[in-house]
Amino acid sequence: MSELQIGLLAIGIVVVVAVYAYSFWQQRQYRRHFGAAFKPQREDALYHNAATGAEQSPLDGNTPEPLFAGDGARMNAADEACMLLDASTDYIAEIFPGKPCSAEALAPLWQRRFDFGKSVNACGQNASTGGWEKVIAESTLIYSAFRLGVQLADRSGAVSKSRLQEFSDIAWSIGESLQAEVQLPDISAAAQRAQELDAFCAEVDQMIGLNLLPAGERPLAGDEIARVAEMHGLGLQADGAFHLLDARGLTLFVLSNYDNVPFQHHTLNQMRVTGLTLLLDVPRVEQPAHQFDDMVKLARLLAKDLRAAVVDDHRVTLQDAALLHIRENIDAIEKRMLAGDVVPGSAQARRLFA
Image (tube, rainbow, N blue to C red; front, side):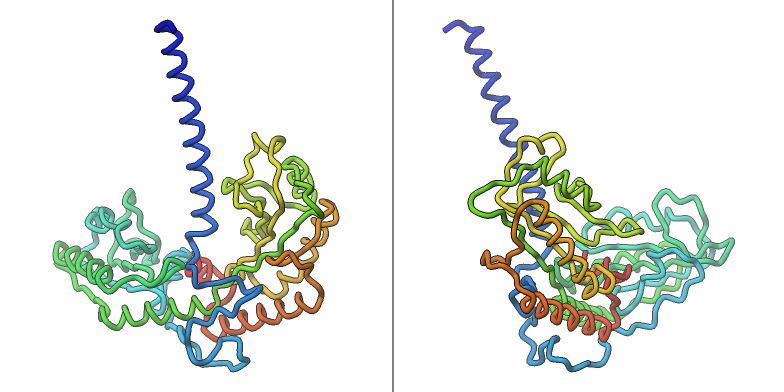
């Protein structure tokens, strides 16, 4: 074999390995998007009660007192991020400089903002207008006060006490550099609120899945799925699944590959899948019980057009009685969220269940 042939062979092997590695990476990213974002103990409400060990189930019909009825952020601006900052969901440090200053004063926060594993927001009181607005590092405005917040919990769990201490130390150092008055909440109390908030969210964090499986061993073609999905208003998104969006552009339902392999525009005509799953993320949609009714209708329409059946994870056809039971559970979750002062589908709910 000549040196040229050996070289060409080596190049071919490298290309094959690169293609395989890229495919593996894409599948890993997709699984992380639909799997790793949810704690294992927060199981599908189609089959399981999601109570997290508390003596009283959130679905037992009793309505407890609100857990997180915070006083709200009293701000003049309409900036959503600042309006959502609340002591019930965030650890908030307040800084009042002796004289107005720019966003550069928050440099220590910009350098560490991704270290806490939770959403971090900086809001400033505009020295000219008096209104509160989100502050970014590139801002050229001047501010007379700051509110720095780190979210207490999300789907990855509660923020740790050590992270809260680090955040508090950063806020204190910023205040010292500005010779400012600094107001810092108690770390231990905030850590306790974070645990309570995480436990509450775990009780109501449910994702409902209706499976669409064709009869026998007949696979579903990717281009056929895309055609039917588009016919019913679902579009393929960057995460490799088809989404039905509401008027605000927010996801109502997600149609994904039953085997978790993402759909891609350029390979749809080559894909063959064993089935599909239509998903409803209960806390992230408004009126989830009503949305479930629409989801069932959509699942049946998709199943009819794809010549498939709507089944559960045991491949048993879902009858009306089973669907009614699921709806009742969703309705109970919705009531539990409202009792905890978190409105399903609200901006606050979307950030807590992110």
